[in-house]
Picture 1: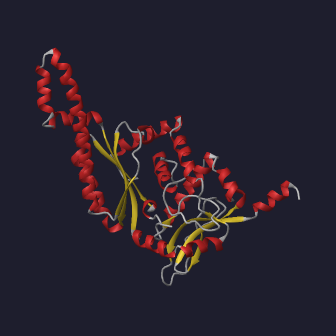
Picture 2: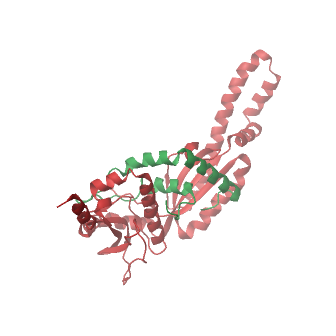
Picture 3: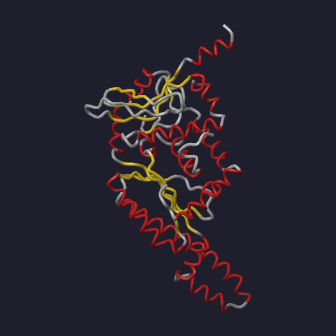
Length: 279
Length: 74
């Protein structure tokens, strides 16, 4: 057999890509709405196993086989499009199901193997489904403008004001040391102000969210704002609590915007951060 | 790259990477043929995101977001 013929033959062989798992509702017979999958020619199909339903696509092993997929990961454009497609499938399923999202790139040899893996972890998957039922994930980032916060702290802080007055009246010799002390005190006060501001919002949000997780703070090169990131968190919020959640954030914004604070809310996301399974 | 849901907003792509590559269920089975190596590509993609033209778009998007209203849900 020539190499070309071998390639043609392997293109027909498919493996199974898994997006996530939902519960089969009693009496439910319909599968998911027709959706394009991770690659355009592979629609999303249901794979029912007992009370659970996985959403899967049959994908060509020529791209998604073990070594082929690892090689494909080096193609940044292809990879980015696939990650976006993975996110889009889960996003669309969210309107019809509570779905436990799988990590990008979960691929099994065939449907039987995928079903076996799901069956083996049925209790954990059911627990995860219970945790996320009726809820979505919302990303919340808090920022502050250092100059605005600095001006606020300079006028509002009780420990800063006397130092500033002393600095204004100091002799040139005393100035040097006072200035150093002032800068140190100011930095500490700003840090405390930002931390307190974040803590107040966290405490209020804790009352209306089901769960919370912290994400690593991003440097400016990634978040792209001319501001400091003070918090990067993500919340699991039940649909019926969302209005309360949104209001807490809006109140915080109104109260703290004059001191240089701002927020960025993204979502709703599938609950990626709240479905970890112990194995 | 084809137009799609997330293209309009590189910030949303960055958010998606934080989630889909880092989090979500991983079920190891006897016949799991992938998932390995996915964490490794995360670093590479973050670099890609911060590359010159993408960083420029990130800044523009951030500017548009700020003008369109502070902290609106996306």
